[in-house]
Image 1 (cartoon, rainbow, N blue to C red):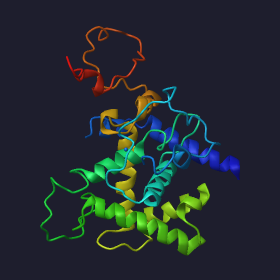
Image 2 (image 1 turned 180 degrees about the vertical axis):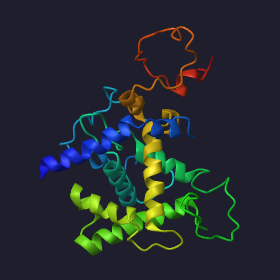
Image 3 (image 1 turned 180 degrees about the horizontal axis):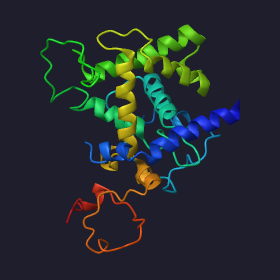
Image 4 (image 1 turned 60 degrees about the vertical axis):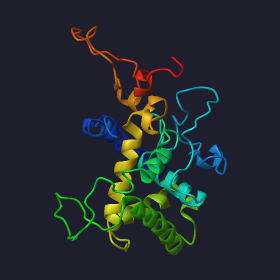
Length: 256
């Protein structure tokens, strides 16, 4: 049983790792403080490659909730994100890549409030190629979705989502992916699609936005990040593994 699970997980991660459309879609897109310890957020110790690439204790000011105020809700988001992008021998998972903080910050900002979207209605069911239409803001959808995950877990297993095994958490998220969980103003399938999209963005977006800690998501794909120029490499005939660079590197130093 364990072997089957490992094979399934490896296939999923290999697909994401090798799928160039994932990186192409979110690379250019554009993070619990003391209440929750790293022990709470840390993935299962059996996972491989969960150690961040940067050694030593580093004070990370972006690791603070901006949208969520309930630590339990943030933990549900964290563990759900980890099941979508789990740590394994290929590299760290969503939690160690700071994906939950990335999502939290996005929900608190313009994206979460649909600041650039037309929200006056009317709202009709969209075609499969159009995506969903809803009067709810994205942060409202996430808040409802997190609550529904907790509710569904209690109903099915009589446990909190954070107390479930990885297999049970996958079953809960699978029910949302299939659209089997009733939600108001949006389907559970649409919520899962938003969640999965946000997780992948947090994995592969520039660290400037709060995720992709230490550029580990890029390093798993040998993506060079935001290089200033390729003039010294453009004539190379062999594949080059280039140390990735974040937008942070191009920002002027304070006081200069």
